[in-house]
Length: 362
Image (tube, rainbow, N blue to C red; front, side, top):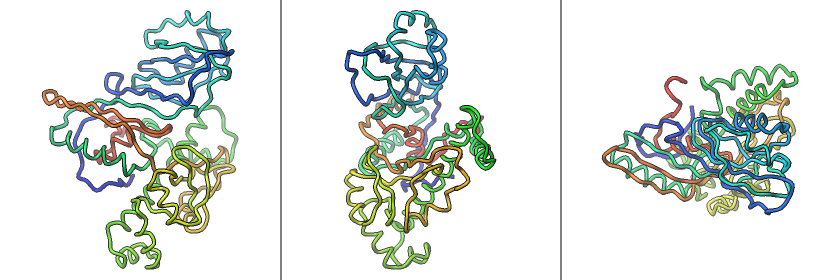
């Protein structure tokens, strides 16, 4: 159960993720050079997972898995635009792709293939229904505020399978100490990593809320922290409170460093120069130290060594928000951008104060 950062009353709307109501477009990290031995294809796909998209190109061209590059995974239940790369030698057999669920929008050339993570972020356009005029106005107000304050970077429900419990299978596999077999087992174990991250993030948000909502003595009593520490935390300008030993990253995806002066780093955090990171526990992961490690340790699992560990940005800022409301149909169309690896559904859940996991999957 995630803890929401904002204190507003829930905003009522209906969300249905489908190709007609959910649109995603990758924001490339670089422009093609126009020359080279690799094709860069901008592709619009409908009702297809990225894995299925890659398989279609593999089957149509005869390319090997390792020859097809992509920057990120995109939802199946959506209309998405994303880029893939192929060796130039396959250009003539692209005509073998005949499905109407794929449209090649642009073709260019580059000296290097596309690698995972080579995107700046994603643009979203989402249609929400059954939303009143009042709630549409509140949605706008809150979303605009979020661009300045930011939001927690939770993993979305899509990460955890049809029933939301795939992380439990991943935990069992991780604790078996066996070598992972295939992409499915890796996906399950990564869901367990994500679950632990979400738990840690929820706990940190709850802690920050206690500090923000209560006076110094009350917060110290609730958290069992020294009064002087609470005073220092209250001086920090940002809602999400930082601690000594925090692993920070240059925002949005930059070099990592340890926090040795929480107040100084909180000022940089306020300016969106750096952001705290949470641990995706695993092999060779960087762990926090001092106070930040004390908060991180309950959500660590040193038995998870079958996957490489990592750090994930914990707090992000949405950008370029705009909306259009149709009073007759009670439809609100929202547009915004998020950094790579972030979930639009988590953005919506923070505003709506409701889980968007479809009823049939709960």
